[in-house]
Length: 227
Length: 106
Image (tube, rainbow over all chains, first blue to last red; front, side, top):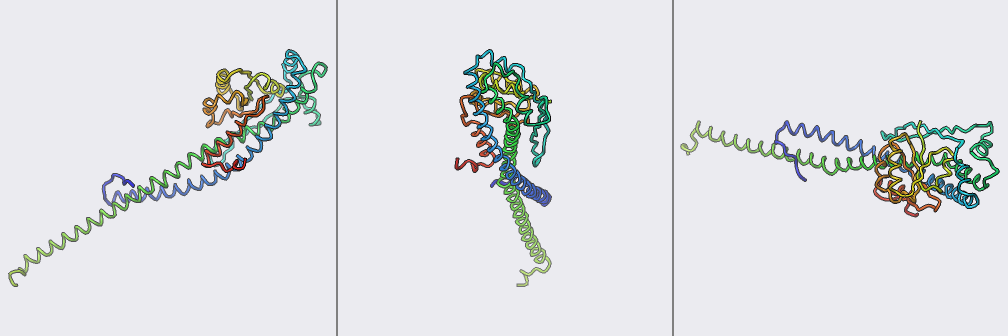
């Protein structure tokens, strides 16, 4: 592992030790974040999968009925029937915060003339056409689509959340790995290098002092001449 | 207030008009891409695209993958599901976890 290009001084070492402490702390926090994100992500994606299965099934059914309707009705009549929709959907988007990932929350208001009975409203009020000239398969298709609408929005919400979470997890994982496999080893290596360099200097110093002491004693007492 | 858009071939998406979504018929993916870019600029929070058309639009759809809006959701067209939508869910699992642990048995 490469070491950082620094001067082997105590100052630098103190600085590096501080950086290492921060890196370790950051690593631990990011790891916790990643684990928690993963937990949330799995919940979201499982829901996403279920919703997608449901929606695809419903839409396939709706398409089948629609195809039949199209086969028995002429195209202009069909288009005319659907030209002016009665129901308009107003979507409002709020955002929620999942582990600092901003995810959308959709809620919708369908401005269909509501009667007191919710079922009756769903059954009658969405059809923008009269029943005289249209096929009953079209009604069936519309009904399925109307019931699929809340699910489709839920699907949009969870699928988008899953995508955003996946992105955040990928980012966090990269950071964790960079800290774990690059920055922290680099810092520890550099600190080790400085410690050894300092010890080496210390030893060099001691030897020098001993030598100097010898020379001074020699000068003072002239051991060699007395021998 | 935000709106919901649907892009796809005429026959697959006409029905969505009746439940209050805005439908944008497109015959090929180039036209669909133009529409999608336009919808992303306006306040469309969710755009549903039929798999039939979306299968050639990978790049354009991926561009909006990491932004909050619009949420682009693939839906089956009247020719049935191609499984692309499900594959995208699988892809995001792989992206997040590195291995596919949810669809192993599927």
